[in-house]
Length: 366
Ligand code: 13P
Ligand code: SF4
Image 1 (cartoon, rainbow, N blue to C red):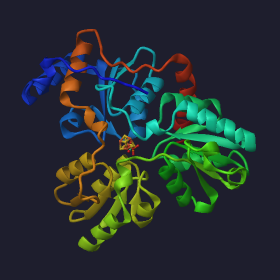
Image 2 (tube, rainbow, N blue to C red):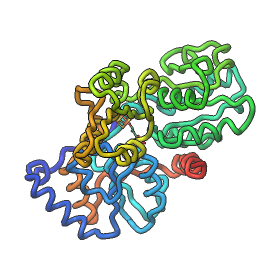
Image 3 (cartoon, rainbow, N blue to C red):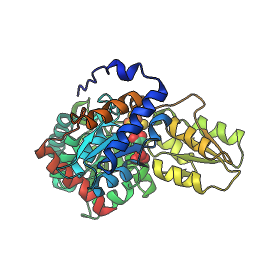
């Protein structure tokens, strides 16, 4: 999908940090409780400080679903999160993404045409009534709607296990088609006691996913060949190096990391869980964290009594999360105050209806 953000007026690009802070504070004060600013943990410090609520993608979806006071929700995160917020909010609420180019390279690895083609290919070799499609939150609303229409659900990194258990509780011979992140699917399946032998990777760029009919029949998990470019970088060597430098230190990683990394970690969890574990760790703890660098650096700054470092010594930012900056935030907030909001994220009614089914299933399960 092509999403283009028009250049900002000079008023914002040429403003000093002090002037931008002033614009944002003034607009927030003018909008009062009619405004809710949500911030994902990966946001840069200059942006996250303006968030009324911070969280992982699950927590932010809940905030959006539960708040009916705010008429404008400014989502400091990425496109799929803003779409989900639009689907979960009431018709009188607008969701705004400060920069339309804030996408997610993993979410873009599966589109509706590819998933529909996959479903048809599967139907040609097996009974798709036995397949429960599960999409990671990091996917377009169109894919969430596909899942809603076909009896599946959305999951996030904080509830993937509960959602998979729900899927498998639907019958003895259930298979799961999990997209777009193969790693979250594999790591969660392995934590549930499944093995590689139960899993096949579906490559959307190959004929029938690169699988034989027997592969499809044997698999319990069909894992879409998608990944996160940020978490993909963490390697077993990073874990070994950290342990050598910090014997007794603890390794905490996000489940989007490869299984070889997850297998070596002490704890694996969503961004919210990582933050909770770091917060609960006693003073003096040494933590090596495998997730986006802004979050790791913020934890290190906010908890100076602990040593919190990135497992990857080379900086590892999410370039799309990084697109949200103070100029874009000031621009969109002032546009709301002026009564002519920019960058509203609006999912069409038909897609929203089915995406809501899939998202609400997730919220009911967890
Ligand atoms: P969380 O749900 O853990 O916040 O993850 C979102 C994400 O995009 C991680 O890369
Ligand atoms: Fe997408 Fe990875 Fe960025 Fe998360 S960290 S938003 S999965 S590209």
